[in-house]
Image (cartoon, rainbow, N blue to C red; front, side, top):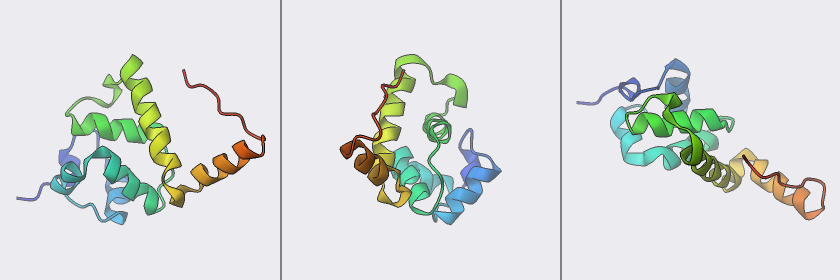
Length: 112
């Protein structure tokens, strides 16, 4: 039985539409992909990078409330998110930041 994507905790109507654009229409597909691969697909199909959306997905796949992510765990997820976005050329952000860093226009700030 294929469960809808909303069977995963924290997934609402806006996320359902974004996942559908990425070809993810069932909870089983989303679980099989995992958070990082699913989020890459969202980015590749035009969703704008948003850290909260990413960690809400991670928490949901773990069956946890969206606001359960704090402290060191949240900082580690932020690092994963930043790496994922930078490695996804479709977002443009990774390439642009790399170029700006090379020419000295943007200095990466340390995340708290």
